[in-house]
Length: 366
View 1 (cartoon, one colour):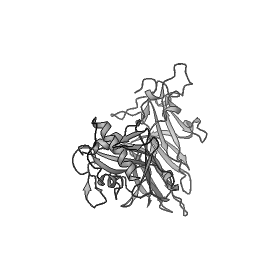
View 2: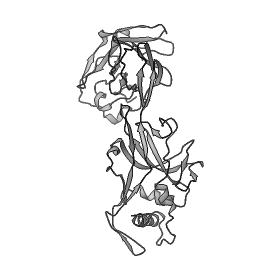
View 3: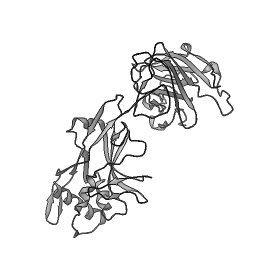
View 4: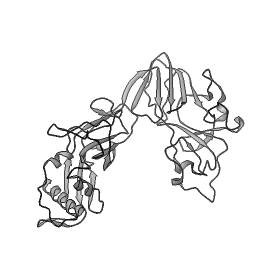
């Protein structure tokens, strides 16, 4: 297997550098780079020393962009020549969503090769195999032992040796664990988009949970936990699903607050959910008429229902203008300044609507 991969890389060097001969021997160290003993995870992505949070990426160091072997790795990204895929033989490999070669720059990388040396600490970008893990909303733990397969996509000849279309080389990568952090708390603040945590409320106590972005508080949940509390996944997303919502909120600013997995709240009575109204400017003035604000909730069937009358608008004790409602389950809520519109003839392409934002203006693209 290694011989086949070496031949593939040799061909990659020839085709990348434009030379007609390849005299240098393939260094065995290059194989070690595919099998780094300790995969790298960006700061904040680990649940603990040995475990990666779901939904995060894991990186295996390959080489520097200035490395004399970088041309080989660079050539492997040529989809016309090679295919790099993940071996799905391990059942737990289902928790890996994608694998690819990337160039990245990290502020604090610590990558150890199999010989014990460290790499990837120099300035600039480096080559990595990137594995993206899937999100899940339990406190289960999964060990993943990924393997990659490098496949030639056409016939090639190197120094008289033939590499045929379909020749493969399978390489094992270092194993790692995927698990959410499990904590018990009655008072916590989470950043929107933050996952990888399973929370167990403090039983028989009042629990207060807040979610915020880089600027403001977005939502607050207050409830009296019961004596037999259940865990929940507190991830709040503010990203739009363009396929669902681009047409419905045409030509208006609308904001989404979506709790991933619609977690149930283990409380003695319905919890109080405060959603901070997004139509407030820097001077704490409403930018739209209060009577025009509509709050929608998405049902299990994906339909939007108007729940404005199920809550109330007012200022809370922190002088925040909020929409307050009672609930036993956190779902998906949308603030709109006008009723949803029906699909129009001049449909707005989804790729014209921003993805990484907490509001949408499908008519203008802003």
